[in-house]
Length: 183
Image (cartoon, rainbow, N blue to C red):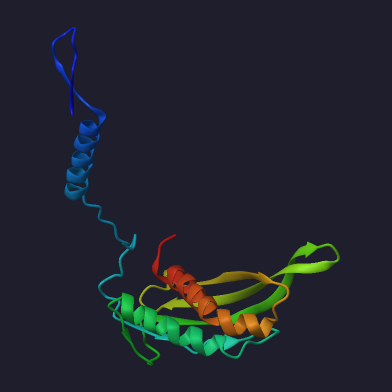
């Protein structure tokens, strides 16, 4: 519908017209616009680095979840194979030699309601030992931690059954980032 302005003699489109024009404009813009993103390592792997070895991660925590060490060991191997060009080896002369251990596994109270515990936190600590056989200046030891809050009405074994995969994934990602990113 078009309205006519009696004073000026010009025609003014109604609001439906402007909504249509704006919709068309936004459609064209969204079709033309592209958004690209990606993750790039701030310091790519040197070309001379070809191999890696992940040694079996021990569990030295006072309380032991028997699933953690083998799962973190395998998950880290798979992550390195899947996201880098490095080739896995079991030789002592691997360019990147990765070892470490679960150093802590504890539950603490984080919330109290009345006289009862309402919230607990499971904290898992991992000690990473990284050796670069091509450049000893890049060797390091570091700790990574992952914490998970859960309702105090749930037992630790229930939480472990449901959340071990999440714990392993997050610790693996943290270990990988410590080794392959320049923070």
